[in-house]
Length: 145
Image (cartoon, rainbow, N blue to C red; front, top):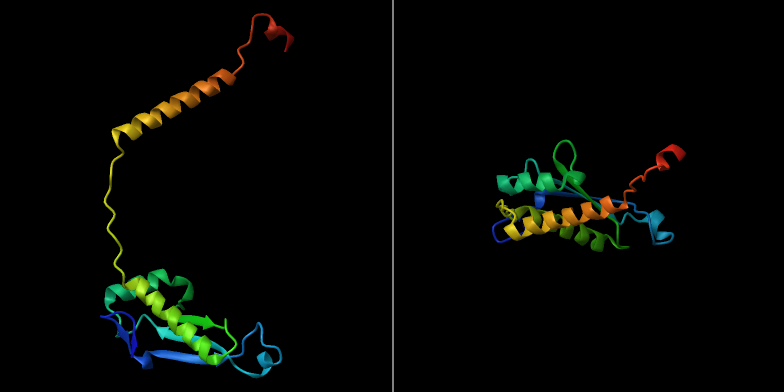
């Protein structure tokens, strides 16, 4: 069991790992050893996640999801298989933790009277500045243009 929060734990058999060859540092070792991890978690059909958390996870992690709702995390930051495996699990845990947090309800607020007055004063000052930039034609200059 992978413990995410006090209420949420994911069964190990819901997580599938595949080890592949990775790019990056490692010299000749890169060409011989499969150290990168591709972690797959079927978020759409997971029985471990509550419905609300599943929906938020699928919304927040859209870039990692396939069309079937499978979450794919590629980890190849480290040179060892164990470190990459732990990194992938940590990233999955963090994604689910973020999805488990209920979003705060936003209450509409109205602008204060002071902020309205300040906005109008700023607009008036800006208008005056721009009106002073306009050149007013003098008599007789119109024919020479």
